[in-house]
Length: 344
Image (cartoon, rainbow, N blue to C red; front, side, top):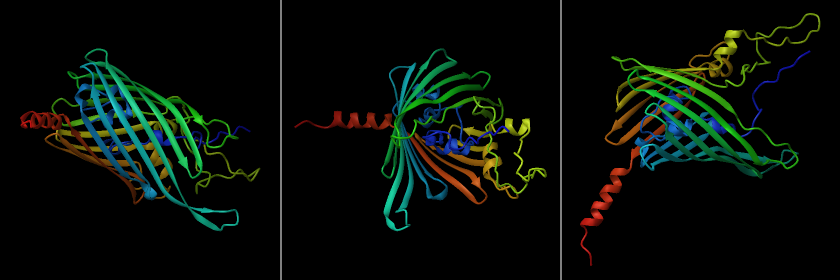
């Protein structure tokens, strides 16, 4: 008898896959093809880092399910018109937990936190092609257990402004665990992922459609619920039969689809659909809005505010809030004030 294990729990540092901004949350959790001057885009795909992010900063906060809280910050810098850098940090707070002994006696509380320190670099190869890399230092503190790792993202981006077509390819989280949670346990793999995406904006319409594929390195990307109400029993052995998914069911678990209404640079509406979330997180009898997401972005001068909401379970959604700002104006004003001040 062949037994196939589920994919959950097969790697450490899975927080390195979490979306980092309201825009990404609204678009289904993965968005690697489209960019603008928001530095948060380069956190996902380093090839999207560009000169328009020079001296721009992005801050995001997420109120996730089960009182989990995430925070992100990014800052862009361009050495010239073809070389750009992005400096980012991600903070993941899982709250307080009760510490007990083997007898169940309460001894106090402890916290669980993860950190992602990231430096990204992108270079414009031609007017349409760019390449980039993200270097990451991952740090976890689970009570008295500490682990660290290093990871690398390699991304590619193609932009045809005449045809309004964008495409991207990303290899994510290649790396190595430096310090293990337990010295007696083997080193754990990182959440490796291979993603590809293509988007098309209509010429005389605000609509932009994007199709993204993830986990391309692993065909069977599905989790089968052994507690399913629809499980089958083998009448000869009286054992639960392994649930077999069809080709289309397995294929759809790699798909994230989203739509943006780009009315202007200062106003966008966003919607996304993540089939794997809907198929595996929603209850069988009432999936409701599980897997769907939505949000919007509003720009005022050099300030952009965004909101994103993603459904993980009926009646339960994560909420993301992001703000990005071009800081170059502040620097110019500061210099002009200093120059205009009299000397004593």
